[in-house]
Length: 241
Image 1: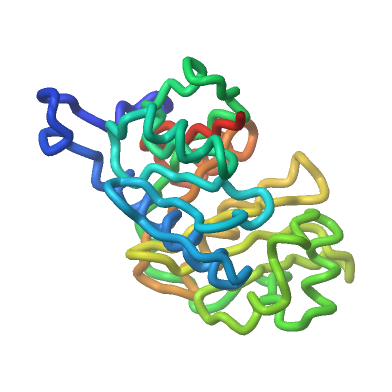
Image 2: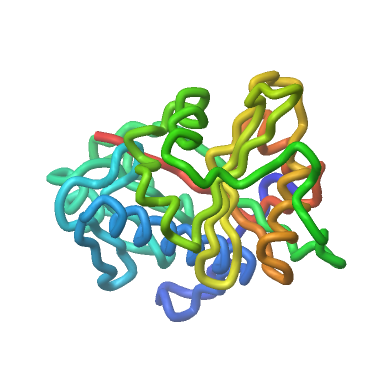
């Protein structure tokens, strides 16, 4: 279903825009992730008139401005982002190249209903990272050490998953229980041909049964997620100046 149009335009007012409810869940869960990461990093943030904006410097690898409603005035977005950093264009409708921004990447939001029945336990070989040393080993493979600080392990809404094969760390992902859904992010595997998405679906069901799964991906990870039952529900663009 690549290419789903997430927003139906029925007029010029934002009040008349109809957002796919699956996309709404994905964006709201992403917003919860951004809020939680800012809290972890001690950074203020707020939402005002459809825009999430960081109060200082955004956590590494994260945008400083994020649309949480469609059809936001791109002039306003460009003005706010110019002094802060990148833009997460959650509905892919800003067209910021006209305001001096470059497209960093174009991904797709994904959504999957809850696994029924949920798995009773994690898939064999998978575990939850519970120690700073374990997190350091995990981030050494995936390199988000400056983002996933050790304090994250004390927050029950986050679960860092690791898979060990014959004693070696071979794959991982981060799950975050956000607003109405579980975000799946930071998915990695040592072997690019490895397909871990079905394992992640089962693991999420074991940890948070009954919750839909969301995230955004591109390339091979997007194709693997779609093969595991996720549906493409719209564009997620990231712009930088």
